Length: 217
Length: 217
Image 1: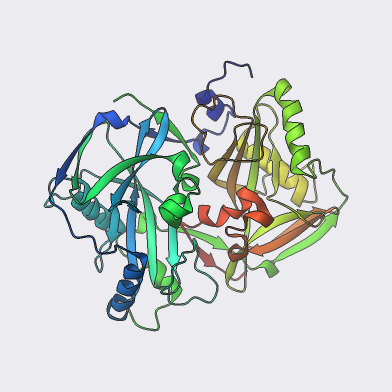
Image 2: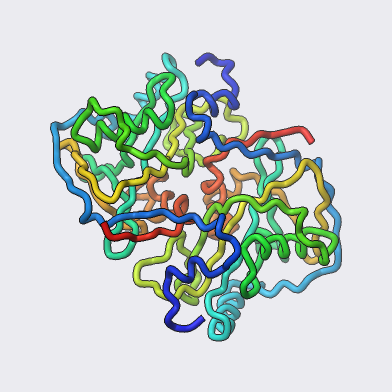
């Protein structure tokens, strides 16, 4: 392999195995439009508040299941993850809690529309929810999450599922005024537990099987 | 949801989304037989040796691509990962370097036969190589791996792909005498970077989307 080998070729060079080559198209940040809308309440301003809330809800409704979206754009030829920032230090993947009997896909579309679209009455069909990348379990009303159900845990308190959502070549994002939508490079998110928390800082690893096609819009 | 809810039901309770429920069958450790065979040379007894070797090989053959297998068994109702232990402190997923023009699947079957089967002349058809779970890149002849190609890295030196390999309900593992095959619980491997290294310690997260069906053999 000579000096000229491109990265794209490197990713595909071990022939005869096309079924294993997972490609994913991403488009430049500049191909999207960003606007704002009225603020929406944000309930969990601290982990402490969040834990109190899941505890009070658990008795009534049992396991809390949340769904979150991984949305990717290209900037400087590197994949960037779209994150919602609340106040200055809280970063979230767009998503939220499922309603009783709501499917993962329906719930995620509803939450994405609420947090990233202009029309809350839309049917969510604008969102293309792809595969589940991973799940995190909270065995008790404690801070630590696990990517498996730990041995002997029969009644986990929270499950968060992370889905890959495919963006079209262009679209509008309309973000509540009390949040900012940021594009953060995967290389900054990776293993940055302190800033982004367990779920977000693990996203680059969950995406590592993909080869990203960086397209023009 | 009452006190009696089983873990299996919890995992499936958000109905209407069956396509997203990734199930994976695993069998008890006791359903497998373990024997030994002659030692095989183990080249990389230290990371330092490994880095020297990929450096000397890079000039001649370019990017080094390795394939590794995630093999799972059940013990104490918790998934366990099969790891090869060399000397007392080196843990490896079974696998190894691809030959030029060898496909990921063919190469992994060849390596699994060499390290875990009785017959090195077999065609590898006994191994069922499943999906690619993740990839790790080494941008330079340095220790750190990344689950993405870092920005501006045009000529990575090593790529390691991790595949899920589905075990049958029963089989023999025949392990070279200079290695031990261990079943290590996912909860011990998880984020245990110091003992198991970047790739192995990240496997539980890469598996987190699966619901494990723990079957009787």
